Amino acid sequence: MQWKIVTVGRPALPWARTALEDYLSRLRRLARVEHVTVKEGPLDTVEHSLWKASEGSLRIVLDERGTALRSLDLASWIEKQQILGTKKAALLIGGADGHSATLRQQADVCWSLSSFTLQHEIALVVMAEQLYRAYTILKKEPYHRE
Image 1 (cartoon, helix red, strand yellow):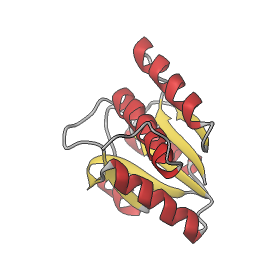
Image 2 (tube, rainbow, N blue to C red; image 1 turned 120 degrees about the vertical axis):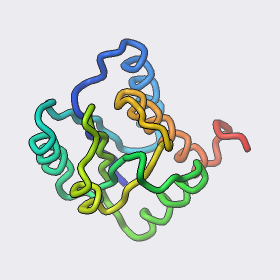
Image 3 (cartoon, rainbow, N blue to C red; image 1 turned 180 degrees about the vertical axis):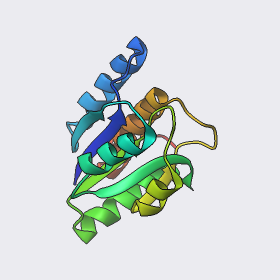
Image 4 (cartoon, helix red, strand yellow; image 1 turned 135 degrees about the vertical axis):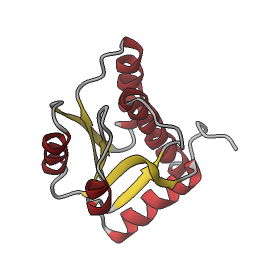
């Protein structure tokens, strides 16, 4: 399955850029993944850009109101999607204004990384790490410990 992580703006925090590069580099050994950014602006414009950038993909919105998954659940979900033949999945991470109720309802899936509201750069790094973790679980690599 090919992953597209779509975010509003590029990470500005140096540690977030470094962490993202590290996890994407690790993840690319196990899966196809790309990071795409859209320009900041009014919420409706941003959401239109997120939607357009994720066209043709199973759309997964990350939002504090979404379903919380454990790492093992995420790995199982990925495995199930691969069996179902899902070719592309897009993770949509909003900017400072988050996501509207409309976007959340239109998405195929809505996940929560935390019941806390996370700054979007932190959400991006956490999601990249969790994707990497899920693929190491599927490949039975020793990264994940129970």
